[in-house]
Image 1 (cartoon, rainbow, N blue to C red):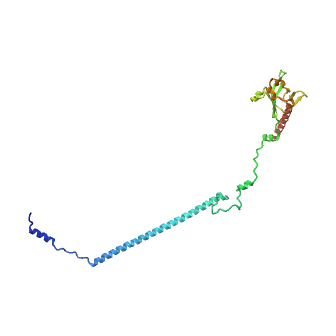
Image 2 (cartoon, rainbow, N blue to C red; image 1 turned 30 degrees about the vertical axis):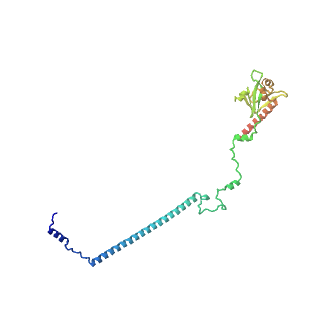
Image 3 (cartoon, rainbow, N blue to C red; image 1 turned 90 degrees about the horizontal axis):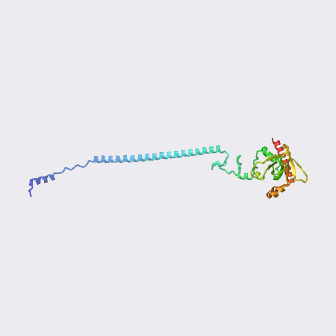
Length: 274
């Protein structure tokens, strides 16, 4: 091992044992000054906290006052709208109790009803209205004044030809509504074919002989009378299906006379309505 010189050890020992210079304690005035400074800072902090609380309280108060004002304003606006609504309702329906508000609604059972308002009970007590009358027209007046037409009659008769043929021919006749019509066959009528001839029975004159099935019709505007024979027995024997369409002379004469009177009455009624 190397040997450390004694002089070096002594120097190090001396260096560690060098005397320390102590720091003197603070003076009393400095301590007092520090204490006063701390108290001032505390007072300043306390003051700032109180001012902050005051500002917060004032802010809350202002906010509450603002809310109260807004609430009052809303109430006023609502009341104003309700008044306007009541005015509009009363103007639109001044007499209708359905539109009254709950505050103004009263029992209307004993109060007189406004004009034009009728209860269903009152309506049920009223007599039923008669149906509206139809407008009067010449045709309706004719139907009211003229007697109903007599019963129609149709069937087979023998008719004398107006040409050079003098024999009697079987024809199908119809007396209806004041008219006399005839077809050559019943099938023509059933198929809707127009009649061969038709005559208005106004001014009809009938010529007949007692006990004979033959008779003659004198019609205005016709130069020759129509000779007819109601006895078609020989033809019925040949065609039994004709039996249901055969009538006696008296029945034909009675029906023709009734329809002639009806046609004359209808013409008179028509002339009085013009």
